[in-house]
Amino acid sequence: MNKNISIIGAGASGLLSSVILAKKGFNVTVFEKNTKAGRKILATGNGKCNISNENLSMDNFHSSSKDFPTYAINTFTYKKFEEFFNNLGLLLLKGSGTKVYPLSLQASSVSDILYSEALRYGVKFIFNSYIEDIKSQNNIYIIKSNNDTYKCSKLIIASGSSAMKKLGSTSSGYDVAKQYKHKIIEPFASLVQLTSKDNSIYRLSGVKTNSLVKLYVNNKFVEEKSGDILFTNYGLSGNTILDLSRNASYSLQKNKKIQIHIDILPNMSNEYLVNLFNQRKELLKTKEINFLLESLINKKFIPYILNKAYLDRNKIYINQLSKNDISNVINQIKNIKVDINDTKGFDSAEVVAGGIDVRDIDNKTMQSKLQKNLYFCGEVLDVDGACGGYNLHWAWASAFVMSQSINL
Image 1 (spheres, helix red, strand yellow):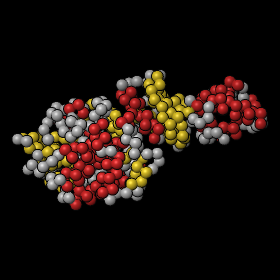
Image 2 (tube, rainbow, N blue to C red):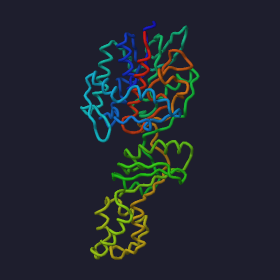
Image 3 (cartoon, one colour):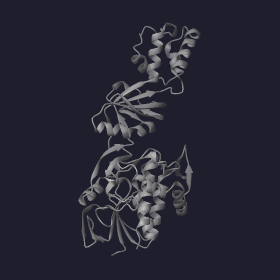
Image 4 (cartoon, rainbow, N blue to C red):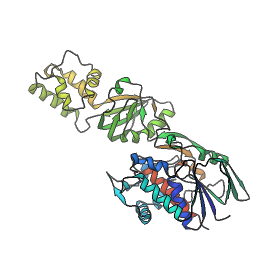
């Protein structure tokens, strides 16, 4: 019985820990409610699987207990991660910036190699498995599922969060934690698209720009990011928006006013644009203003910008623009304001912030401080990362240090 370990969840952290523990000689059983292992891995990076990041600085990880992730991240470094997966036979590709992918650019390569390795070392997977009850008695955990009843000496909760609910994600890990008196930091959607009730934004649906994007909360500047942004028929998306969404989502949860400011020509200063407009005003006197704007911005922006600039519709030619008209147009180009009313929620979120309060978890072993031989790893804990492979690396790192600490 002392060799029996049960893992709830066959996601990233559940798979990695099952491999390490099985190699140590434990009898490992993994319970998974889906029909296959690693479904959320398959959805990461649009199916390409942004598996990790070379830059693992701690400012890319978030927790209510700021220092909690440090030990795991510093132990399972990028070099250690690279070594671990190379030993499994997975070849890696360094993408844009410091992002890392499987060489195949297929997420299935990652889940398949972990699943195959687990099977090779005798890990037992029970799919379509719903945990109905867990009890502990005489240092033994009794797990009742819809399939059968199982016993183990150590129990690992690697069930993830309620992000990507369409893939079968649930908050069942929180229920187990609460059963053993753990507190839950209220979860909220992160790395998620933002929605707006501003109908004028919907007309820009499908436009993608490289922009400087600023987040304002209750009219105060909070942070800014640069990169791709996508205008949609519900609001805003793109990696830059996902990067800002954590603070936006948290503030929305607190009923604060959220506004996004977008500079769609971040590489051109106001002064440069004023000079450009004035030059074109002389050179292109008889041309319509659309002619100038089409050379600068996506066509879909033009009616939006002109409307927001309160430009007189009769002033259709460049030489009719006043100094004030030019200033208004440039200000709109450099500072599109979008009121945000919500996020796309847990169904669309790539990750959930919040989770099991880590103050009652040993950060070197991931063992509960409240219940012996009960472990938690991955996204179920109150740790989340920025966009760019950080959440998967947290799953790997937390599972690694936990599994290394468990011995026969």
